[in-house]
Length: 216
Image (tube, rainbow, N blue to C red):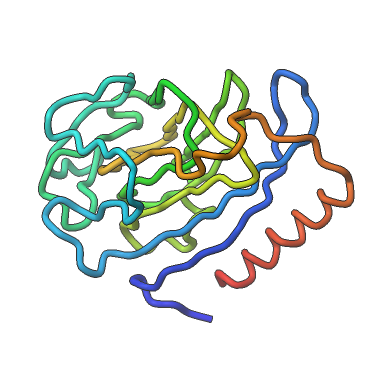
């Protein structure tokens, strides 16, 4: 089924990840939502989640960021401005640095960004207390690539993260209007996924397969 670029897609992913600290399979249940460029403003798309903080790069590099570079406009072969965005944005890739890090200074369970182009060589990683919680490439979110989208990640089951890494093996991973927050203030703040049984592993992989089929 084909959905136009402005359609919204929601799917819950039960992700099997390996924590480097204990090297055992674990889970984080994450709701991923993306929306296309309908209604885009000269500032680009922004989060629709209330009670979150936003970094727009218009006042320089925000506290907690390292690596990458703030850009404005398009330079062919280096970086391309997210669709409709005439303001500053951030770029990671071979033309700047291949990784940037955002240290959030505490546990969060929501993250959003206006993702310029969802290429397969661009990746987001979510970390908590030095352990990898989950990772997504651009093609995991929207495939085939159809331009810029605002992407929201909502972590469930009491899971959280305190650091986000932006990685690119090409030119480039461009994004703007980074948003983050703690939506489930009453939930546990462990930041580390609970171990899962083999039965849950099977259910999670089945759910991921269904989500991928629905995206086609």
